[in-house]
Image (cartoon, rainbow, N blue to C red; front, side, top):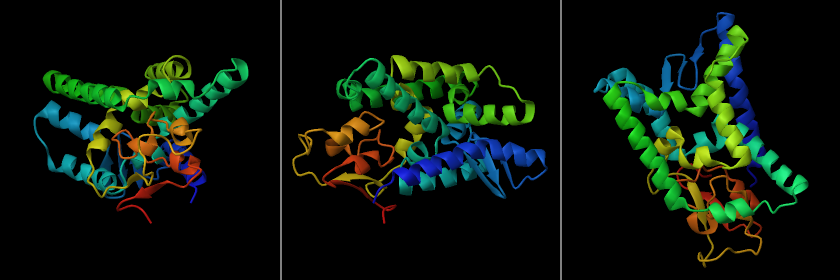
Length: 275
């Protein structure tokens, strides 16, 4: 089964939903309200786990409304893994387009090998160390200062808020500069750096897992080396992993690109969320 078409349709749907929600609210349709920081769908409240974590440390208590808002995203992550990152996150949708542009420029303009960055930047231990350190430091300072610091740098939350401001006021806030800055760095010096090494939401979601959580599984018997000369799965992985041996790494976002790229069908989804 190929996942690429299903993934892009899902990403586009979630991306444009950012604009649809405030538009519905303008016409006084309130069955769905909020941004990707926190949404209310009917009686169901759903919040970014980082928002809940920051609120808990800033206030020093975990209230019932906060706990109930965490149930749905935790349950989804426990069953399906980081599908929010790989299939739903509006920032990753834009980051995918930016990566395609970066690769096009390297190949057509500068005549460079597009696999250079991946093969020389792969270090999942370093990426995991940096992102967990960033999460812990940001959460600690948020608790000390009583300010939800990490909420102000949540790329999907900022995107959703900017979409709401644009629909309602036909303008943007200063936070759009933060998004443009990280996208600029991704296009030039640091491809995929935000999702791999800093995104607080992705870091928290990667903690919510069990041995049965949906993930990529490799059937390659010799995990020390790629099963094809082209190493296609590593070349397409947005997290800079080598899926033939790191298929269950905490960086994996279950995007399915490595499965689609594997010429020998040695990668597959496995776990509670698999068919």
